Length: 143
Image 1 (cartoon, rainbow, N blue to C red):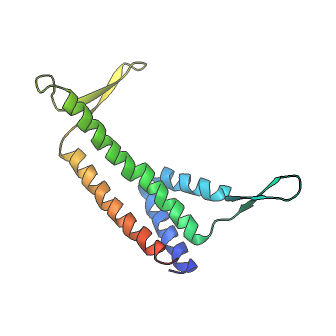
Image 2 (image 1 turned 120 degrees about the horizontal axis):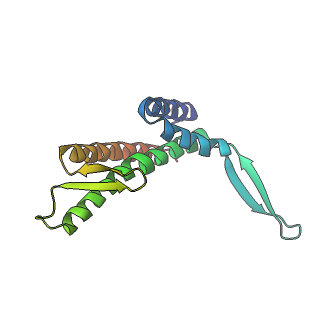
Image 3 (image 1 turned 45 degrees about the vertical axis):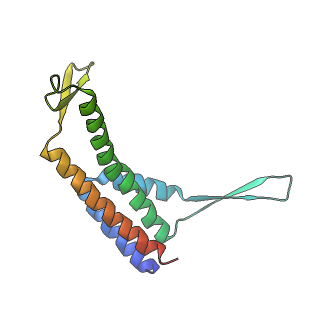
């Protein structure tokens, strides 16, 4: 891929995210806007010089991919593991296949149910993970 293709791919992914996961796109853009910090040792009195540079189109795409993985894919996998852990720790007599999280301040709770919906989220996360891995391989093969 060349820089134009990196930018096109970045913009397409960002536009997709902005439809339902705008906060993920904003996280990536925040990191990108801060720039890449480069440090170098200066011969003058053992000082460290710091320089901030703009990320390359390839690096911007890599940052966006990492944000997607960390916020969407990893979260779905953590949910799966947490539900699995609690379901294994609860005896079948006590378990109604639900996990309730109590908010003591508002005195309400929300329930996570180990059902088809949870499995579907996990499957979708797995598909997204595989697609992102293929995209990363394509990017890595360009170096």
